[in-house]
Image 1 (cartoon, rainbow, N blue to C red):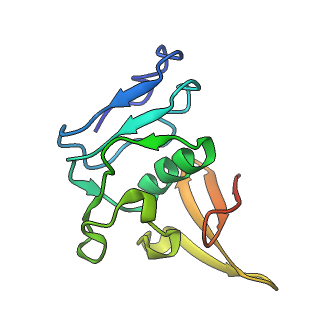
Image 2 (tube, helix red, strand yellow):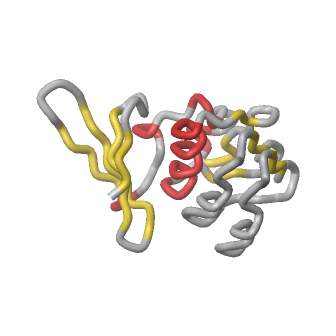
Length: 131
């Protein structure tokens, strides 16, 4: 796993390609300081599509970043080969950290993102709020 803060000084970085680096998971907030980031490459890594990876998917959607070569899930088996751009929050296994919440109009999903933070999103990521 890459250490927290590894990219914090690269605030002007526009493209980050971490493809083919045997990365399985990434720490929460690892790309937060990269405010100029436009393209992100995570292809060719055995990514575990669990709750921590949801933060990365949400960041890409929120900032409208481009994926380089469309990374996909390696595990769990039920999500293998699912492109991250197509990953739906309700498909992600978060064990006890996954809390579905119902509202009047639609289902909203909450996911724990570590150290007292969590995100609440509509089921198609149209709106996400980090708490």
